[in-house]
Amino acid sequence: MLDVKVFLNDKLLRKTTLAKNRITVGRSEHNDIVLSDPLVSRLHAVIEKRGGRYLLEDHSTNGTYLDTVRVEDVQPMEDECDVGIYPFTLRFNVFSDEVTKPLIESSPSEKMEEPEFMPPEADLRNLHFGLLVGEDPLMHRLYKTIERVADSSASVLIRGESGTGKELVARAIHSLSPRRSAPFVALDCAAIPDSLIESELFGFEKGAFTGASALKKGWFEQAQGGTIFLDEIGELSISAQAKLLRFLQDKSFSHLGGTRVLVSDIRLITATNKDLEEAIRTGQFRSDLYFRLHVVQIELPPLRDRKGDIPLLIDHVLSKIEREHKLSQRPIPTPKAIEKLRTYHWPGNVRQLENTLYNAFITTSPPHLIDDKDLEIRADIDTPSKSFDEINRQLLIETLKGCNWDTAKAANVLKVSRGSIYYKCKKLGINIKQLSKP
Image (cartoon, rainbow, N blue to C red; front, side, top):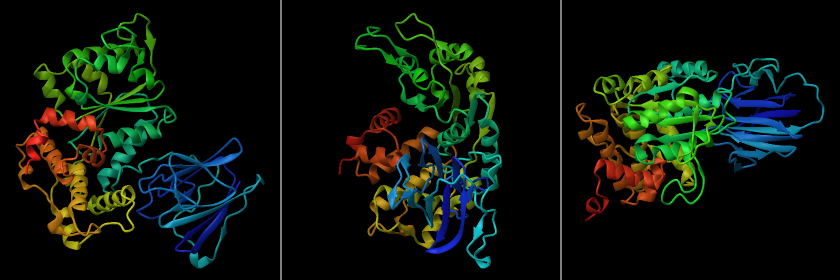
């Protein structure tokens, strides 16, 4: 049983005792402990009793701190400890008594208006939208859709422009689903050469081909019981589509070079920014595979249709920069910078906004203040006639330039592997050596 005291700026807001084996903390009213602040994620943290000890698990965007140390994955809690969820501090004391004490308010004047704690018998949902930032009605509609489809095992096709957060939606669905304790595997179909797609997805036996020195399990096997997310599904070749379709028919497969039939219980989520219907008409995408993938469809809104979320996204990205670079002070945008970011229509969506802020942080001196003149937003990628590849090419060049053409730094900024940077450069015709010449 946990005695909980909630502080804001050292002021005691409320306290209670909870006798539950699983306690959720976050901004959503569905949580046991509700913290109403935009910097708190909808589901920020989970406290769960396992083997006689309480464990703290971080689910947030901005971080959870246990006695001033940031929580990585899951951390055991001492009998007396402080949990920091900015701007709140939660003080916990563990008791052996199994009876829940009544709620005690610190004083009538300190009572908060929102429901403070859900009763133990409430039907709690594990709402995990911490990585999806936005309060626009379009985003709230998206959150409800995610919640509705999460319990199902139906295939989901996520559609939206490049940079709208398709992988984040896939992760949110997985986090809400009964499969959340099993693996989540994300693969970029465009980054896997057609000759390797079968061995990557299904694995291979020793000696299956030159260089196959040992058995290797494929991603479908490694994700057993969990979720596979295939991004840029429209980039798969016709032959690769046929192999995927055969697997989806009964979830069975064999290792490359093997004869034993294996079965993998996975949920498939795919994403694309391509017009698959047009690809079917031109013979570039199989209609039978399309209908297998298109059981549930989710459309993501472009950033230009929810500009009211831009200030929240700016705060979210700058908080990430502060954490990742261990800054003593978070970068602050000037009012002119915020206005410039707010009025731009962002053809590259949230990813372009994030890259622009990272670029400004890297190139600005001093780095803690970002002015409108520090924001390099290329107007030449506004043209609607430009393809997504052209937009992505320009964004990648801008990121590399901001990182002084250091591919490792660019990979860290874009949250991808260094190999993906090289692959994208080759695919988009970017010659780093030539462009980096003075």
